Amino acid sequence: MSRRAVCAAVLVALVTGCSAEAEDGDAKGAVKSDAEVAESGRTIGGKSSACELPVTFDIAEDWKAEAVDTSDPDFVMRQGPVTLVCEIDAKPAGNIGFLRAWTGKPGDTDARGVLESFVAGQDGVSKEKYGSFTANGLDGAEVTYTYTSELLDEAKQERALAVTTNEGPVVLHLGGLDSGEHRAMLPALELARKTLHTSRAE
Image (cartoon, rainbow, N blue to C red; front, side, top):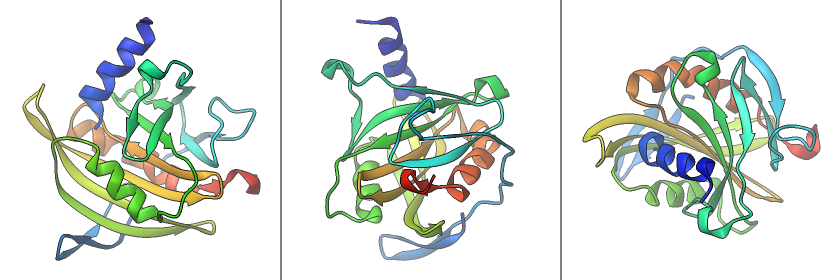
């Protein structure tokens, strides 16, 4: 077992964990964010970037992207229909948390269905509010929810968004050490959502 694999597993357990009309069961609300858009550091997702993905998007200044090794099936991290393939670390920018990219195989499930399956694959989730968005020709779904960790015995805010492409679905998930860290990192998620393109468009 590699040291990086062990660290990644621990971080997912601890950290894992936009305005739109939304639904939470039969209750209607809104997925809202008052966060500004972060300054762009660089674009990832292309073949020459740290993480090759079906989409490209900008990551916040000073955040560091690293591809996740999926060659060892014993350490592949799956949640719902998608697999963790890229971690974008906020620590170089002074925050504790990750923006994580997950990808899956092509199918007929739309972005909302992918996102619902992703959230269902995470224990301790409550107060989900779903919405939709459009960015650069991509129609996506997004969700905000509360995650309660059994290890830490505390609740914190998390968000995720999903889009589907010809190469399969992509989920971007933003957790954080706690709700304070999560809110501080929201501008990075806003930047990623605003700059989403299919890889072919780049």
